[in-house]
Length: 287
Image 1 (tube, rainbow, N blue to C red):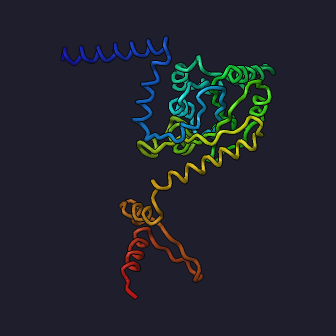
Image 2 (spheres, rainbow, N blue to C red):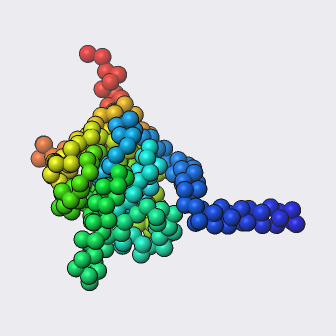
Image 3 (spheres, one colour):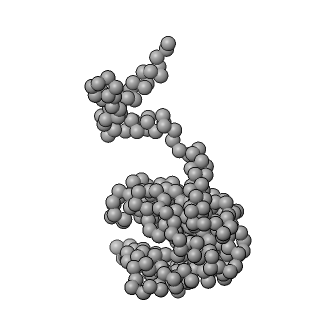
């Protein structure tokens, strides 16, 4: 018993020491978050080589979950400054995560009474780009509620017009986070069970663009980047016949309604299991 308590005390002391060190030196926490994310998700990154080694870079992507910024932080080959809505800090857990990148974030509060708050935040982003930094921006402004990408705000164009240094705009796509506990799908964030364990999460960096492009053109580039990601990942997805067999093989799905035919005037229903057996018989039938 004494040995177990001693081991527990050492573990607690180690955790406290780690987080204390990470609080003073936030870069230390990167390794921990890498382990946590790669333990929770099967994460893969495509086209890191598209990053310029030096110079200002504006990363623009879709926004489906509260930890998209962390995925990009780990995927980027260069340090990243984040543009974050202050509403994220209202959640205690997210505030704890964000505390480790507090020196690399720009808060934007669109609900403040000050008419200049958003303008000052955009100026901070412009200054970071003029200093040659990498800045991550989600121009949708808030998380998607239906899995589809929202329109991009005009603040993106304002930032690019105000910069004096050359800026490379890199569209990026994130897939796999819609349906996670950090997204709006299936209920309130962090108050639901995950749909699956160790879900596949992908980050892809698109073809670099000039800073003269409009918000609509950059949004189209993000959409194209997500399409490229879907093509790359299609080799890992189940084909429809495989998916049907996989679904029908589960006992809980055997007697669920699978097909409905109203072509003859009366409704004819086949369960998922009946449809599976019918397809099996047709495949075995010799003409």
